[in-house]
Image (cartoon, rainbow, N blue to C red; front, side, top):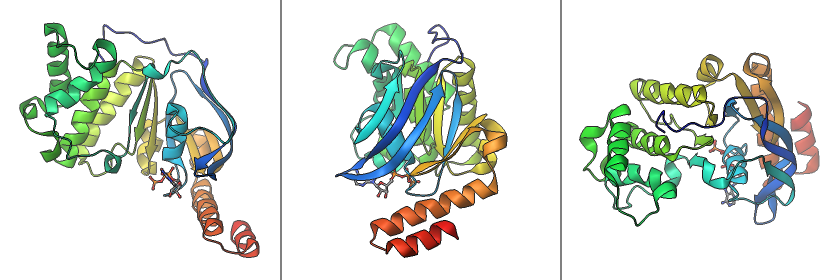
Length: 264
Ligand SMILES: Nc1ncnc2c1ncn2[C@@H]1O[C@H](COP(=O)(O)OP(=O)(O)OP(=O)(O)O)[C@@H](O)[C@H]1O
């Protein structure tokens, strides 16, 4: 995302509104009764235990998962202005593509997949590779990069997308501290440019340090608001318990056992 391309300025405008969203897979709900608003310019962390529904929330925003009931409303936000980085485990590393071409994919929506790259576009790709520190890896196959290098390449691709909303699913998983620092600086830069960034994370200390807003999720909203207010150990414990209770209920535990766990 070059500095020349500006997104809308930061404001209190709503960007995504969830209204009583019930969504999941094969008729089984994962998210239940989810409500709330992401504002334009938010830098929001989504925290929750494994299986809490963080990725499902992202997929509801991208439109990949359609709610069974309730609505996910995008306000003045065309889907092409949403950039989504799935969890590393959801990206096929064997796809035969060079690092350069993978990063270039960030421009596809603007220039089309099958058009040749202009000199300006090539320069933009090299600048993005340089910013994330992997210009020297450009000709290598994407699949042979280390976890950190791979994530740097994915961030370079995001840089080129010029998105208004950037969704990052566990972006620091399996990356070293130096890489995490580089990637966090980019997130700060995007936030400074008025873009909205939402990241699913597990590191509460990092969230406390760098993310002004937090959503704690456990299939339903446990808490959502300013990080200093929301990110408490009580809320984190509750989130783990509520997610576990929903998972137990899906595995067929009796309603009584579930209620006992919920009220413990
Ligand atoms: N494609 C799918 N089909 C069926 N069930 C799914 C699918 N994707 C996710 N689920 C189920 O939905 C629930 C929530 O998963 P989700 O990936 O949204 O949680 P998460 O909070 O992102 O978890 P994690 O921290 O482990 O990535 C889990 O029980 C998961 O098994």
